[in-house]
Image (cartoon, rainbow, N blue to C red; front, top):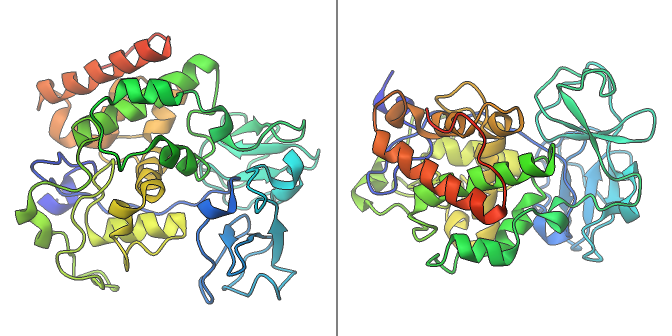
Amino acid sequence: MSHRRAASLLAAILIGASAPTLLPATSASAASCSSYPDWVAGRSYVTGNIVRYTDGKAYIAEHDNPGYDPVISTWYWEPYGCDSGSGNPSGGSCSSYPDWVAGRSYVTGNIVRYTDGKAYIAEHDNPGYDPTISTWFWDPYTCDGGGSTNPSDGFVVSEAQFNQMFPSRNSFYTYNGLKAALSSFPAFANTGSDTVRKQEAAAFLANVNHETGGLVYVVEQNTANYSHYCDWSQPYGCPAGQSAYYGRGPIQLSWNFNYKAAGDALGIDLLGNPNLVQTDSAVAWKTGLWYWNTQSGPGTMTPHNAMVNSAGFGQTIRSINGSLECDGRNPAQVQSRVDAYQRFTSILGVTPGANLSC
């Protein structure tokens, strides 16, 4: 395996380690219209995708389509109630989510409406298992009782706690940017008991803390590496330029193929405009949550699944940078992450759980 393929996506910011090829994922979500990607004519969409049209309003794909106009193709699109800024589609009902279809493939984070009218969120990728039977793959999702479907409304980390965790953070990494990004991955810090939700939030923020020097660095510091992150063997090349795909954001997203994969999953053209990750706080946070919720890196599970399934904080380290840190490779770096996690769980008032190291 080449050095480029073997190194972790979440590279150490001072050495700019390379990243593996990662596959995109999609998820349905609910938030204010400004958080959704702009609709692009001719871009393929699947049932459940939400876009912001040119009129500033949001629409949800009711059927897979090759980029039909939402205001014309009403068979394929329906208005999505978010333009009032409430972040709660359809007044908090489940009617905004696509119907579950037996045998249709779903990925972690997808939300569907079952035949009983209730909503369920995919906790693991699955080929269309029944949400009321396969509880490993699906969890109930609160929306039918009038509760908010926007996880950021009840985020387990308050702004005061966030500021306590990152007293010297760069002003780019805003709390509001993080909350805006949560809607793209509604399962994050919104699954399981209150303890599990807080542990997951602490685990994510602890790893981000390590990758960015306490949310200080927005871009990779080793500029000598910038020209290395273009893989010209990819059919789409490097449209933004040879040196455009250096590490940015809370996970230090690197390489043209990772910008392509993350952008496809988020519905944002990051391949063509990688600078969004260093100029738009919500986009930057979304790239971090994209990795956390959909990628396993050198590990065997996503960091999200590691926390919600009680595998322990150590497995999040393995999935983020295990090839360079775990199994005795760099115990000081591992301990740095563990220390931050224990500090953050203390701030949130929960125990850190077991299996902290890798």
